Image (cartoon, rainbow, N blue to C red; front, side, top):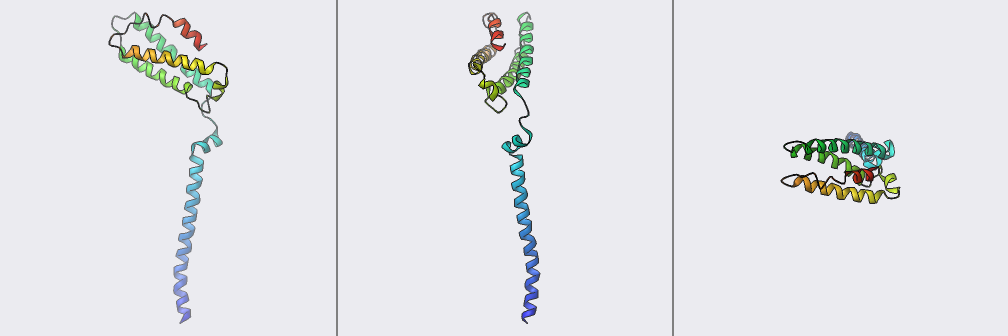
Length: 154
């Protein structure tokens, strides 16, 4: 009789062992994927995906596009504030990348004077934002110091 009880116990032991192995394998797999797909893990594997010189180039391109649009709008009979706002939002998103301290901008923040330039640029961006939110846009007093702004970027 005892032998018969042992056989019934072994039938339950095999599924229990497979269930335990499945749980262990699932736990290991989940841990592996969470470690691999975490931000820190991705940086360790692939490094930063955007270097600071590319971020600066993208900002400079969007700045040139915005300046061109401003020049066009200065001579237009009616200002297209929606287009200006859209170009400014894109420009601001590029500036945000340069402003935010991250792995790709740490070398820039190590350069002497970079934090001060970012602060000055932030003030200029805020002034432009205020100008674009006004009911009627007058370019003359706000963009008269364009050469000064360009010197900040060089």
